[in-house]
Image (cartoon, rainbow, N blue to C red; front, top):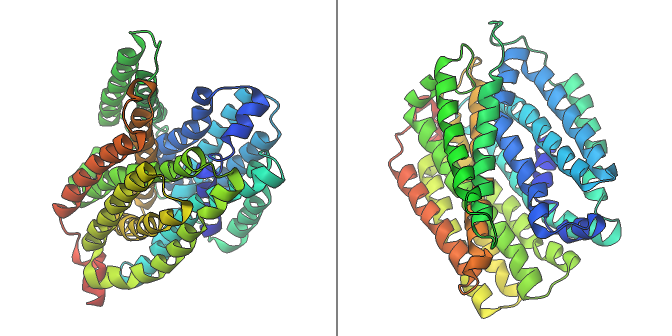
Length: 450
């Protein structure tokens, strides 16, 4: 399960440093290249709840095999594609494969470990692997692009997906569908949930471009709002909704997923700011930029070893607040160091803070987001949590980086603007976490250990 998580996380960031090479190969500009990144994350995030529901309806192992197989085929297509349009299609298919496979994988882990210290350790490993995958994606992107070419950033995951497929057949126990109702899947809800962030991000990106027709931005934002309202109405009427409205009765899960979106937005923004600072302001090449991210990956492993013990002593909410604080300090350091044009060595300190923010914040939020799940709703709860993570990250990048680096704001320091916007989200996330109701005693690691 962690190997699958690792390579799916790698594919979120592995294209970043390779984007200039992809643009040169297909003769496309930066605005078009944005969709190679955003198309994957938004499609994956938008369909994750559908994937979680598929796991509940079909059984976790079937969903795991289906999603992993689709992800592997799409990775092969992305590596061999002759056109840019087909590359974008392949990235969309990768996101769809992720959306089916990841909730099934996370639900398998959640249901394999009882609530308490053992589940907190398992989720710590899961979160650490995901975080390392995001960072290693930058490192691999620089190394592979420099020595093998950009196509191999996609092809390298294919043999490992085959290993995951074989392992799922032989190591994951077969399970019967948790839901026996033959009602059709909520495809309208899935399409509306995907369309809402796509239209919103399109509107935000276009708002910062000169020469955009006056009707495009308000039209896109109005479409996003309409899709969001339509999603709520569809879910209220559907016999088999993606997001059952009873989910909102659990205030702890709702607050945990909202805080996940805000924290993930800031963390994803920090990754791109690191890349821009190293390559654009300091003139570091792709290989050097990738290798400079190694301290972040190493420190993530260290912090991931500490979090399970502290999660048991402090409680999940305290870990979330600590992670939010670490991330805020890192964002401030990035803005200051980029303004001073400090060298790459000075970036190690904010990298360590980002690692701490990811380890403490995301593990605590994942624990709270799946507190009290049962066999019947584990896939749905896992899908919602993953959707919050990815949609929050994609939307955060669009808002913070898109607004900060917009041509219309060239008179302002883009790193400062992006940092301030991320800081607003972190403050809101901290308030949400502080006011979050405590989960039931059985779900609280502090009760189990203390």
